[in-house]
Length: 408
Image (cartoon, rainbow, N blue to C red; front, side, top):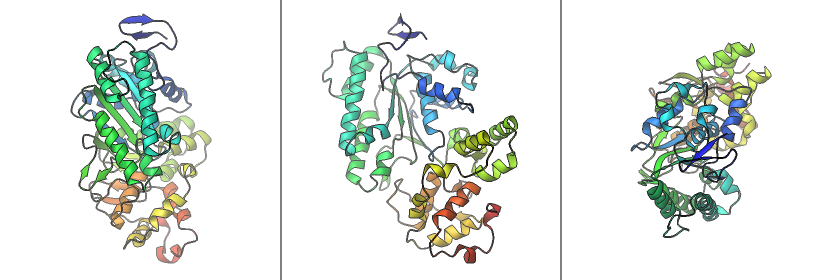
């Protein structure tokens, strides 16, 4: 593969402009493409190209676990990374048909981070941020060693000076942005320290062309405002223009079932149920891939996390929460107010806040028109049943009927 850097053709292989976090190449996205089942979601890049270097360049894309967040992040990085070869990697994909494909591909310095990786090698938020800054500065100074830096230990100043010299802004891709809120959910000081860093590093910086940030939770709010209020939110509550890229669509699943001779109606019963105004029905992609590959319809998504996590939330002592869960298990819908949710996993003031969290975790579907939640499919219904096993809920007496036709 040939790479271009600073106007000169470089030799094949990993050139000096590539790093671990700066311009990491396209290997991770190539792995996705080489997989037995790959569904083309490169159309998402039409949207990122549209908002690139505009006031809407800050994107926070929140999805439940195993809904393809990392694959999309790898795709964004591979497309913009100036050391990669998008013409080869994206050949035959939807984005190639766009008139803007060549305008933006491989034109930027890309910084790609998985915050979970830094957190697992650190002690708290302070250690995470020190390791992150140290790692990024190492890559930046290796790639741009000859600039006249005022302070080569200052990440913001260093990136500003590199941009001033090159006039090439950065595309910043951050995966698992919210892991500190999930693993240290009660440590508000660490959370604030982390949010302050992100704001100081990213907000109102001319060196930023695009920030594509993914996680399970939307941007954390304190009181009535967000510490990162420059971000545009695309969530399970309202995915807006990115709705087609949340999971697999109805037509995509039909195509897979036809190709692998699987029962589409059964696939629909097990994994469908999420629905958005912009695109209609949406399926859990991880579970669909597992079911289509194996030929067995079963609970795959919940194998990535124990039902104990769900049990913690649905057994919280909020007025009306237990009745709401029973109602949902009976196949009914529940109107909720999502606006009081603080976008974390500990600050709950009502049953509606808990139910809103369950929407973001993928345990409930949400209809933004009627503002109702519901249990989307067989797979999720089984997870609820597992979570309330050995409790005093007496489900058989309270339900009287099989929930929504899901369980046999």
